[in-house]
Image (cartoon, rainbow, N blue to C red; front, top):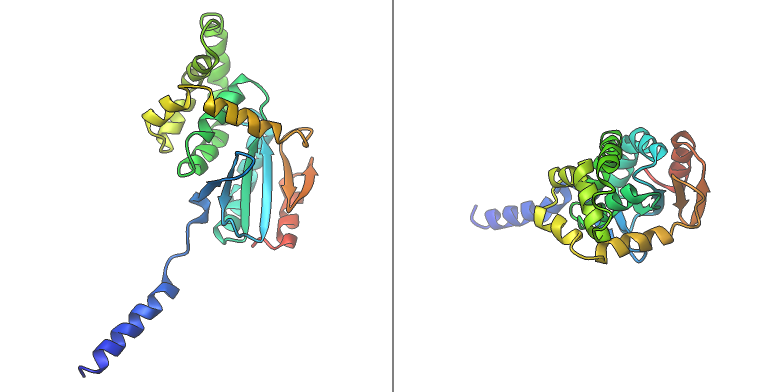
Length: 222
């Protein structure tokens, strides 16, 4: 019996990794060369670049329609999605700056929350900007963006998604994060509008989710 116990223990421990939970790829993000974030398995067979704007209603609609299937594909490790923000206005810049400087750990949750609650914070942003734009016009640009982000409720959404208040303060303390967001936007000039996609290197524009989904499946996303 004594000789069997060590052998049994070794067998059990050797088999444990096979039953381990798969990595939660939907919560994994990493910075890439363009300055944007890649969500999912960096070695995924299928790479999708999503070019979007946080103030684009079509982008929010696309996200709501595609989210369950996209998440399943990313979760499987067969699809990775790079998010590139094409900036359309100052509210968009405030949101993209805040999402980027949330850092890789919080980015997936912040990104999803901004799109899911778009109508709420855009309405607030329009109302707040109309009442306060003239008052803060002399502020530095970073201070104006921070005030707009606060007034729109974007910073509150970011905090709820896991971004620490100190990180939000640092985000708007200087122009580093702002300039990084602008640089990402420059890399989206290939697209005429949003949402647009680059699937394994091929630009795809003006498609619906019903059209894009079979393209992802054909490329190998599961």
